[in-house]
Image 1 (cartoon, rainbow, N blue to C red):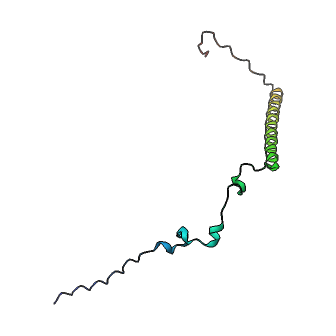
Image 2: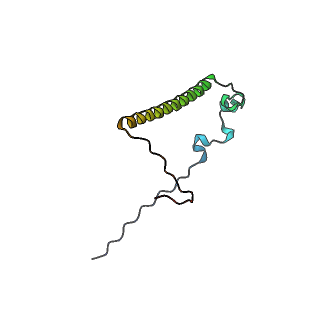
Image 3: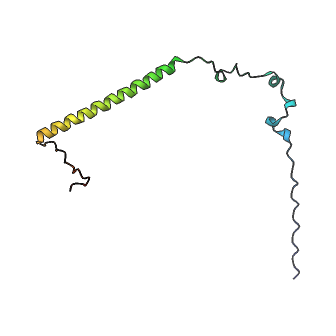
Length: 113
């Protein structure tokens, strides 16, 4: 039997070059629109770019609120610790537990067993 001849491969399509001007954002400066030619942004006209902006009073109120909240939190923690000490003292009084006396440590630097 005669050998089958391989089928001829179809030619691959040629690569199509992409031109730079196809993308509108990549247009050359000479191709700008008339509106873009007249539009200029100055540093002094930009509010966030200027260094002489007025200070807003709201930020001072926010800072005052943060300080008051921090002081209130410190007072609450102090009162709760004091209340815990009072409850601990009352519990020791009701149960008859006496405070433990501190142990004497020898003067020669060795730990007492």
